[in-house]
Figure 1 (cartoon, rainbow, N blue to C red):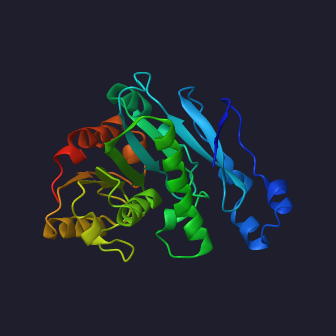
Figure 2: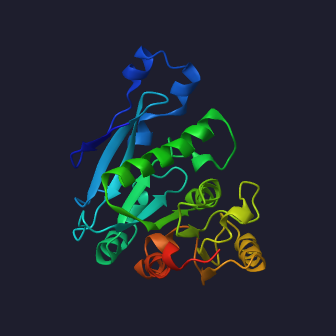
Figure 3: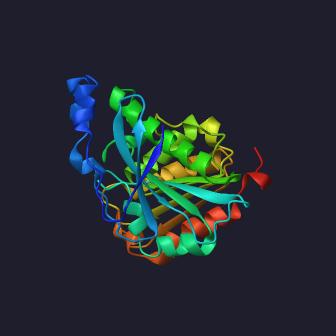
Length: 272
């Protein structure tokens, strides 16, 4: 599994010919589309990359941000960021102030695709599609942690909408990796894909708009109440009048909550 860098402005294309040559099944071909490889951010600070998924031979894109302060001799914090359904893999890097805040606080940020733009990161079930979505995130995670000097005590996972649900799920699947979690308008401690016992020791930030019509706020409040029952260290921030998306994507003050929270939590002073 080898990462490939793409020059700015180049949209990776689906390796259909490679798949056909490898004799890939028709249903596997149908799972991915050319639009899955599209990106949204043209900021030169964002590296648009790809790698070949060994399981299928497909070329899968991801985006990476490395702050200018990065020093290979000093371990850096890492933020794994999961986009919402239908969005491009680098979508979250386009949120107002996000890259500036990552630069200011010295975070390496990676945004996996999750195999397709609606892959779900594995939380939706155990089909081949779901397994590919989960595997893609973990493949990209390994690529970044093997290439860069990442602080194992400061690896964070967060996502928006579908990515929020993916955060709960992947945290449950790999609870020993994460120093902190954050879900924005998505996911729930009460969902069947969450292992509450496995993640109760991980600090959790929940961001929600009070007027979200996609993910009802009442359910999010119930999820936060469950965190309290479990004795989890958590912070719930509900934005008055906030919708499902724009309340964070166009508001750097809300985006800043992510960095402020992750700056406070680390495995070095975590208690299980």
